[in-house]
Length: 217
Image (tube, rainbow, N blue to C red; front, side, top):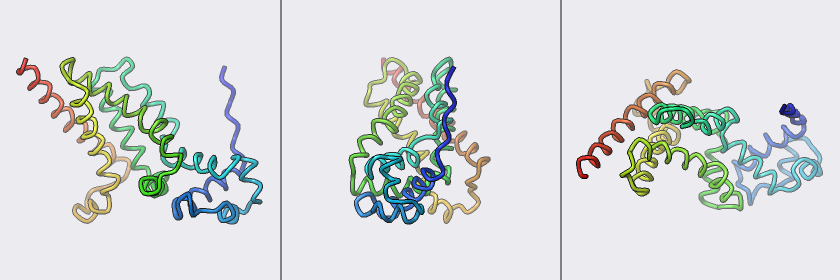
């Protein structure tokens, strides 16, 4: 029987929230422990007590703001297990889309990722290995199953990037979308509609590619 998780102390929660704000505004290198502690209303020693160092605190912030929620992570891990590939793709796209469009997370995550792309820290490798690569590999497996045995790694990779690109457009292109199409909603109901469209569009393209490969044989 799994032991229940211990609740995070209030001071630790305040530090994480303050660190998220400071790191996203200033980046890792310019942010100071003192600024974070002042915003969190804690003693400077609290950083070491709860996290060990500024670097470990930043890693915790990155995981919380750029990583998946526990529910989303478990759902993405399960896709492909006991499901047909089309169902797995639909579930993956829906969960991924909901995760990246959740404003409670992405308001800081987008800024932190921008800092990492311009001024990478040691956490960048962790972002790739722990957050991005596992889900990339899951989606690759789903796409490879849909394309069939004749699909090479390069084709699978390109198709995966195209699917992910559709999802990310609604995240990073949101200000432009709001100007071009003001009626486009960004609530939970709209997320479902967007996910269904991306799934239908992607499945149509994958079926066409698979058919073309079969005719070439």
